[in-house]
Image: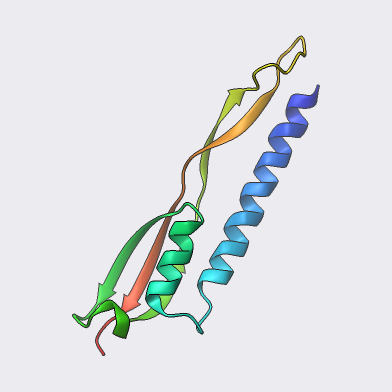
Length: 103
């Protein structure tokens, strides 16, 4: 009976994390390198698309799109329940960052 609650709690946490990370990463006060570094430190696999050829230090973040978190349900070891409990385990976290490097 606890399994639906575990799944619901995991899904809610994923949605909240994705929303808060997307808003934090889009902060205009940060450099492009800082934004990318922050997302990577949070476990995201960052894909960068850019316009222009200026170095990263001269680029401006124009958008952070699709912060996602993909996960799968795995059995909780040693849960001790007769039906077994499942927990959500993150398998990947992709995000796209667009840069304007036209200087």
